[in-house]
Image 1 (spheres, rainbow, N blue to C red):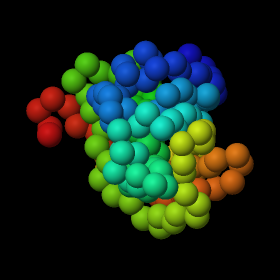
Image 2: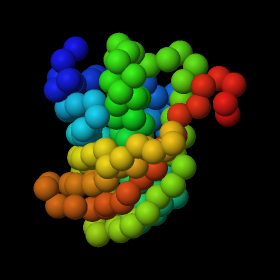
Image 3: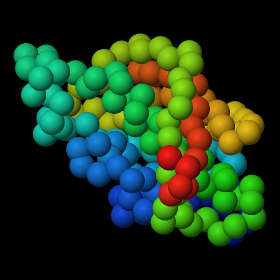
Length: 161
């Protein structure tokens, strides 16, 4: 793989990189990813989501914390790809590797997310220091920002957690 390879990922590829499963896997597709740089991913929001039963029955709104979690999942994929690139290793997730969401700064919610919306996540790597990766993340619907934040992740192998 060259340094500037742009990749896409379907749900099966995503599930190789993330340990999350229904109902907590919040990324449906990766539209583009460049290790060491950025990732663009999407989530189709449907009324079938389990959280809409209680949030809120008369006005279904996706909880903001789940929008943040989806951005963190996209950041996790970018983190794995970036770490592999930095180490000069093939772009393959480790069977026992996992990324943890360890911090959030500057989070702002600008609009609600409702059934029928398609969330687009744009996440860029800001820096990596002492095993902590920092990302700038934005979630948009119809080219309008609904949420943005700085997200921090770290990796842990089987024996680290």
